[in-house]
Image 1 (tube, rainbow, N blue to C red):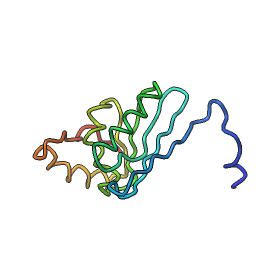
Image 2: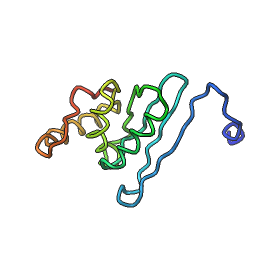
Image 3: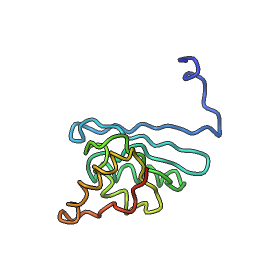
Image 4: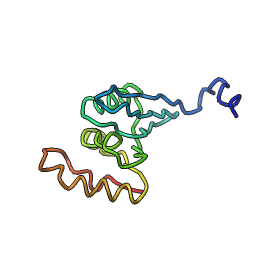
Length: 124
């Protein structure tokens, strides 16, 4: 299995770039998956500055962001949606149904904090 991981990437194979956060972001990591025509994010990180970095990286690809996949409902993996959702309204936010329910419930308070509510963006 490890030898398969060591092979050089094919030109049309998706590229995976890991983006770890500093201590203030609880050392969480988001991944940008860049395919031939589009890209996807795995996790949205914790705060706006980290999400802004992710948005910049997506824009640098010149490709549309189609999905933001949230691995689990810890704030350091989904709170960046407060920024990324409005920046990429076409992107579908996907996760396990229980995770999405938790995030939607937590997001009910987002307008009180001046954050956009991601309801309607979420899918499973």
